[in-house]
Amino acid sequence: MDSKDILSRCDHTLLKQDATWEQIKNICDEGKAFNCASVCIPPAYVKRAAEYVGNDLKICTVIGFPNGYSTTEVKVFETEDAVRNGADEIDMVINLGWVKDCRWDDLLEEMKSVKASCAGRILKVIVETCLLTQEEKIKLCELVTAAGADYIKTSTGFSTGGATVEDVALLKAHVGPGVRVKASGGVRSLEAAQAMIEAGADRIGASALVKQAKG
Image (cartoon, rainbow, N blue to C red; front, side, top):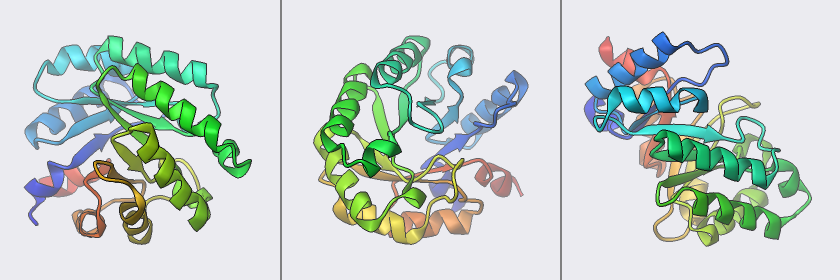
């Protein structure tokens, strides 16, 4: 698999707290130049970035990020706002406390509510695998599938660990038909990205891959 194939599956990402418009603009330029799947950027920059790239690049943003413990109503509002501003894809963090409390019905309803608010846009559900047991990961595959989400995403990149090949393979094995896997967090090389894809990831969230492809 060459770098072009890998980058076509990459959400070129910049989510650091002090990201400036010039930096966002730069990753938009890189995303277009390398035909990335999207750029994943903070919600506050979605409108300006969407106007900047037009139809040349998909804009992805994050909801309930990075901790996931906003109320469902807040996540729905964030999603609706992002869609109004021009977001094409939504990456939403689940409530990890609800997972630990086994509040499966609440988690499912939240995913369904956010999916409805996406108004047809792609929804990726971030489950933060580094904080989960094997049983919790498998249960969340079931819920993400039942909610009608498009992707299950491993990580925010802001917790204690990121994507692993083992977690990608596990998620891929347990999601239902039509649900894909996004590997994110700590994927810092084209070789690592390829390993994730070979394990079952359809999308990679990363900030370093374009820089490596540039040489």
